[in-house]
Amino acid sequence: MQRPPRLRVGDVVAFVAPASGIAVPAAHRLEQGKRYFESQGYVVKIFPSCYQNGPYSSCSPEERATDIMQAFQDPQVKAIVCTIGGLTSHELLEHLDFSILARHPTIFCGFSDITTMHLALQAQANLVTFYGPSVLCQFGEFPAPLTYTTDAFFRTVASSNVVGDVLPSSTWSDDKSINWFTKADMTSIRPMKPNDAGYEWLRPGAATGRLLGGCLPVLLNLFGTKYMPSLVDCILLVETPESEAAFDKGFSMDMANQCLGVLRMNGTLQHLRGLVVG
Image (cartoon, helix red, strand yellow):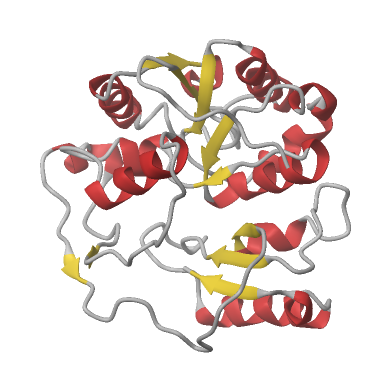
């Protein structure tokens, strides 16, 4: 697989909105994310999809795909960070020219519904991508992104060294006290809770393999399509989204159990080197 060049201070970082248009009502977080990257010495280029908010997506599939294609082909852009996830990244796939994308390896980062883009870029363009923070959720945090997040991000995309051990965060938080749409998120610091437990090992051991995966229910949607890379002998990384019923509620354990059951029934779990659940 093709790994893109590392990010260097002074490089251009592009913001795109492949799915949700929530960057419009949460424009203060978009601007906060921009300020953060600029404070670290990078130049930010915000693509048109970030400024649109249609009924279900930021804009049409064709417009969103155009942003993706242009960002990858822009020789000045060295990293592409998605504003947030959503529900409609799959609409872009038929409008992307993966043969062109394959010739322009660029750091691509995002999570949740952006899983669709990660897997498609791996399957169709043989590109290494980075499942990680988004502009609104992490880099747009007040008064600054969490240090654990930014340290991990830059250690992965901006360093010439091997990432090495990934230690558990000493703290954690949730979104229950944060309201983006009243801008309450810009006047109070997120309360953090101690993470005394660290990692929980269900089956300790050692494994070597490609790390693939993403948001569990989104990943399931791509099985049976040409956009799903082979997971044989991989280390599968999965995480779950918030509840569709309420933004501040977690994905139900019943649904997570169902999704894992599907992975067992279709033979995926039996052919993995390892499984990481976040």
